[in-house]
Length: 116
Length: 112
Image (tube, rainbow over all chains, first blue to last red; front, side, top):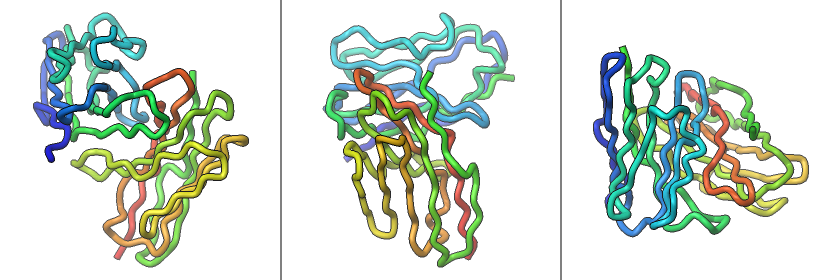
């Protein structure tokens, strides 16, 4: 079946502009995660959604970052007033549920964001 | 702040060589340890999820061990092939937390 998809695959923007990144999780997956990898860094957790529960936003680096998940499926990560330090690969992952120890997260191919 | 370290940062080996990498993580509040392979321009691919101290997992030529008491995991690749070239990531999950904390990865290059 189809995996996690993300769009766009690449995005170049100017400093100060807003950007929206989209994630389509695997059908039936109730948990959705956003991570990012900045140059030379490991994957960094941003935000997590589980069903209809309030999202865990503890990883968002500033209030310029927000995300929503409509209808328990597609998610959009929005970055307002982008800064050069926002340049990174943004990865989305989904899973059936998040509770079990063997729960596996399936990743999308990522969106490479470059802020000039 | 959870600290997940991987070593070495990068590795160049010849085809046929066997190799191993290390992932160290906090020994307290352990819930699970994940290994992923991330090839350039592709999605990270799950290799193993390990939860029990002493766990050993194997998939083809790749295997992994887990020591939760001392906080480390080893990933082994036997008889490396050029298609094994990728970045290998480990990720730690602590109790009570859903998200994974990743190491910065080991980049493996296998020369034919």
